[in-house]
Image (tube, rainbow, N blue to C red; front, side):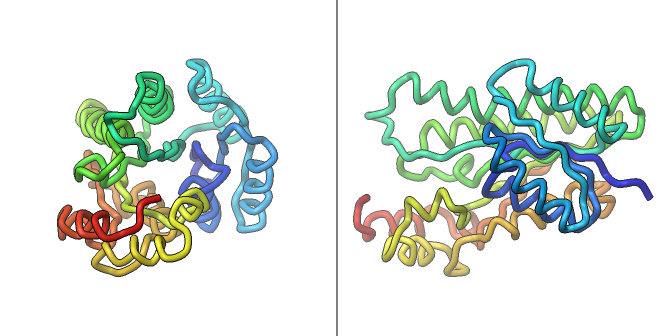
Length: 262
């Protein structure tokens, strides 16, 4: 069986990096995208050591041509495109009354438009290939739960969840599956810089499983959605949140009111 050829955006760190390393264990061939070439090369080396193949494509997803470049690179290096993981993005807490227009636009420019362009470019190639494929977008539980300070982030992730469902319906006839994962708080390097000391423990207490997710746990779900084991799964936004969305906002509301303000 040939290697699965997958494009992973946001691959330099966090969920994207964890996903690249997880797919490498299955022997995948990966095009790794991010803006930091040196960090991407380090991930690429780790991918090869884990049993995969990797090609680095450091480029800004906010530029319209980047999506097509990633597809072209994947086809040139590996002959085809079988999957896409849109994991690029950042989270920043800003109350709505303090949110300026440029910050609002920046969330859509980074989370929504690049994900759409990459989905479209990859899907067009998959249609040409005629054998289908799998696309996984990274959304967030913030898209369906009101959480303090996440107005721009939640709106952007809500858009990602919505166009994921539409893409799944429109492309199902081409055997292209489109799903999203919706993590709760994940213990990435970025988040650990926000929740330090007692704040980290308090944030964990607001989750029924009493801890934050590890990036590798989100990567496992993404790997499943890319695999043949999920061949009848499409149009879904799957929460990975330790029960946070099941218990609802009460748990987070209690945490927010009790936790010291950053």
